[in-house]
Length: 170
Image (cartoon, rainbow, N blue to C red):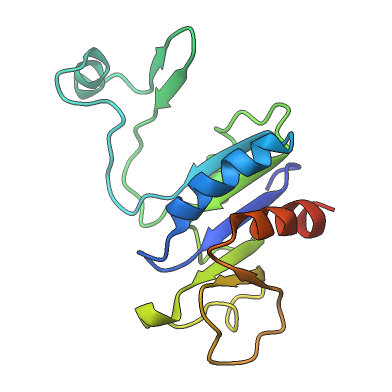
């Protein structure tokens, strides 16, 4: 897919993927890592809002639309609806200069290294038994079955950061 390491965070909705990532990213940055993120959305979304010039121009048919300022750039691409998007197809749009790691939220059914987030109280099945790409399981309670993978504390972002830096990226 890319020469830059990809690490996904796979879980069912409501498991805390975004919350964990918002805690991990600053810790990785503090340790000198340049990190990008790809987030899978299961629905249509807008980054420009009705009434804003970029939204009006996109609605008029411009595609892609790029909005730039001194500090930020956003590009909105429109494409025909497909059954499901593929991570590999999207990575080519990510500027990968000087990145140490690309974190991925979602795309849990694709084959690339992932940490599974599991909260037993939510009642969802474990993913690792069916997904050989899962490299560790982060949980907030003991699992109901043995796990041959590293177990991480879902509520300890420092431990997960250390795993990423010293086990995954080594």
